[in-house]
Image (cartoon, rainbow, N blue to C red):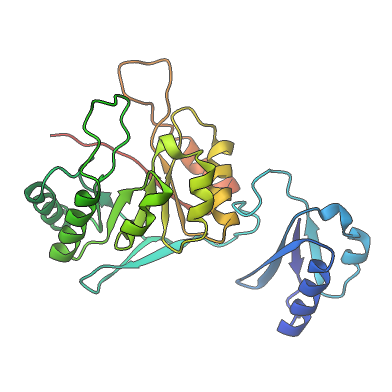
Length: 279
């Protein structure tokens, strides 16, 4: 349930209304936009007397949210999201809100020489963020799984050398403590529905780059974002990385139609498109 308040509602009036609603066993999230204050009601709203609520002097209108994703719904976030991240060089990088953020770098960190060289090339080319995989999920247990902790340390070294904020994939809750200096945590397609991991990320303050699963629907992607937001972290970047189809000629099919749908109709969380370039 979404409650839109009238412009004349003061802070004390809003607080009193929130306390009254929370006393009925629901969670209330407060959001103030340009010229509009809204309350997002999470929980069993059947207990709330809608007729009485509509008669409240500061209630403008009440909307029922039919979609299962509540916190990630565009209705509650009328304004676009923007994430600001400072690099070690002191420069501020922004993603969203009219700012184009480009993340570039190798699939996996393989050596110090490789990642430092790539980081310098990424910065020279104008990208704002360095991406590199320290932990790599592979289909085959015999394939290269990444350098692990050493790979994270090399990314941090590249960060200090160039000033670029770094992005790397997290595969387990137990790896969180070694990701202290990683600026954006990436959740890969295979972990998109690792709900235990997503819930834990909801309790951290770092931005989360959430990739769409190999054969996941848009609703499933949004529900994964909901898990993170339910924990209190709304700094989420949705990544359309491509889905599995009948075509075997390419690794995956990039579903570009999902981008305007997600951005315009249902969600204002940041969107990214994964593009692979090869010389």
